Image (cartoon, rainbow, N blue to C red; front, side, top):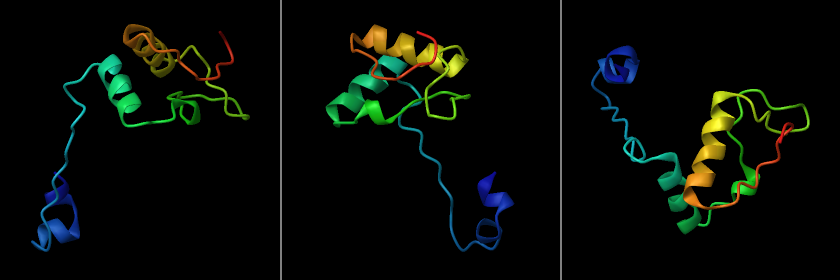
Length: 84
């Protein structure tokens, strides 16, 4: 679709290719891979509705999935949540 919906794609100037290397991994597997790559998860959150001071809500789907992923990976989730 990107090749049909962009000027560069339509004119044949470039071929847009979307890669999704994590698509077949579980959240726990992604988290473990991040640890292997030295991702500082303390600097991240996945919240759809964070507070003004950056705390994750702990209630949205993204927060729930993240928490479950860390638990299944056996790794402490360093995310600061409004609702624990």
